[in-house]
Length: 190
Length: 190
DNA sequence: GTCTATAATCTGATAGAC
DNA sequence: GTCTATCAGATTATAGAC
Image 1 (cartoon, each protein chain N blue to C red):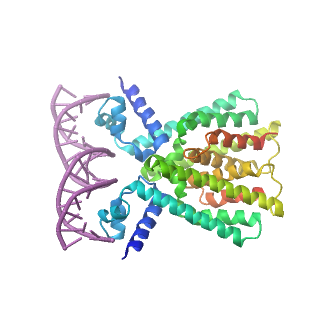
Image 2: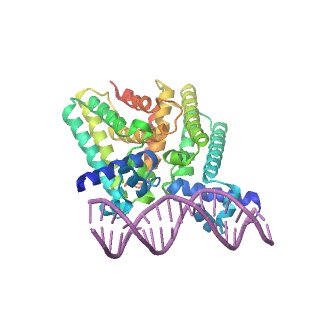
Image 3: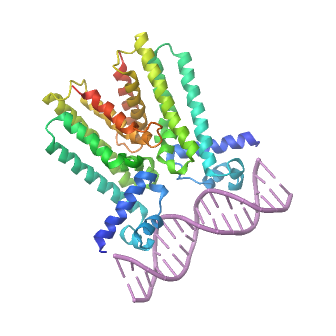
């Protein structure tokens, strides 16, 4: 297996473990056993665990940015774009009670370097900005009913999405996450 | 120092560390050094770390239940009660970028026993129920404007509160948490 | 209740051979 | 790139003295 494949393999496992259990809850050993390599090989790609965290953040931000851009290009109006974003978040994080990677690393913020922490802040800022623009677009194209302050609604929405993913991990209601995200959609439905 | 004082002291430190850094991010050693006792003494009160987690959950649920009951008794209408709840959450968790104890333990759910995990689910359910009743009360007494489905609004509110506390830990905007919670209040203002 | 002592394991990390 | 070997220290936890 060449360099790129192993590196990707490490990150895939680390991403899943972070979103499922948290960044503190797995070790290089856990990853090495699943891949079938030694921990020293992981250190070759990610000298410290903080390097791994930062790589995960960079990758996650790229992935979601690309996803939102695809949504902008393929959905005709604000309402459909917002709906597409919710589905993307569920597809990325919702299964098996996983938390958004950036949400989990915010909870585990002591484990990430200051530069990576800053990127987490930028992630949420970008997420809010995209949502604000999408809501404004929806009001303009008539697919979303009038909102007093789209920027405020967007802030509430992003917080509610992250919070719903957090609560869903322990919630007693089986369909809590899709049902709660659907309430957000119902709120802007014209 | 007698039994009750030491036990309380341990829980106070563990609670703060959990809400600040996460349940995986501190050890019995960290607590022992801050108190000035040995780790074996902590094991005397909490044989396993999971016992400590469950005690923290029980205590936190009691504390917040009492707080919400006090709010019900001392505030005249639904709007003021809702506002009092937001202030209680900020006072309890908002300082120094702490996360709600139950929110953090939901992120760290692998570290808590199944019974304790169940209590986390009950906590969020109770929180939603209290919020639903408060919103209904507010609509009835005229302090909150009409809501199509108070139970849905309450679910969004609770998710947004938990999510806002999570995002606030890394957010680049200094007043993100109070400002975002204020948006929730503005939404129900008549 | 608090201590000493200790167990058994895990942790992130590095040096150097191949 | 991946391995072996190793490190120094941390972790949860227990047994038993005082």
